[in-house]
Length: 231
Image (cartoon, rainbow, N blue to C red):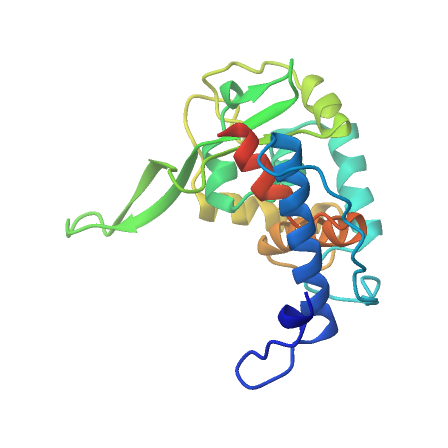
């Protein structure tokens, strides 16, 4: 471990945060290996370098706790397509094309999971009469099954008319294109008194929260372990 800690990257000594990530990563790999029987049980008694990270600093690029609570409250009180779409984008970290392609058949309320397997986007065409068109593509590298929180599952189960073939954002067999939902999101912010922000803030807030949870728990391999177990 001393050899790893003393390695230099690009001529610079690794920071305390980098050292901490290395220790936590190695520990999680060994724990997973022991759990699967690939590695013999051992006592992992090495110490992780002390590090303090301030996750409470104000950052306008992510949602505040008050804004998150407000989004949840709105979805509980009024379960229309836009409100549910915003809630899911925040809770699942979905990109706008993914939320537009989401159907009710992608949800499994027995296991409280949702499978993200499609994305909708607008692409340029060679047709002079139609400069662009909507394309729904199946994901390959980013296809994933995500666990719903109990809160999200409870809110979604209360939504009426969940026809499996219908899109979540429209409640019909027809999808909504991303730029249309961006307009809906802007209207959502105005109607409910939020500050001006871009749709991307929902995804960025999700990622920031996942990083915070991973750091607090020491588990920097949440996604990797999930992928392995699902594979």
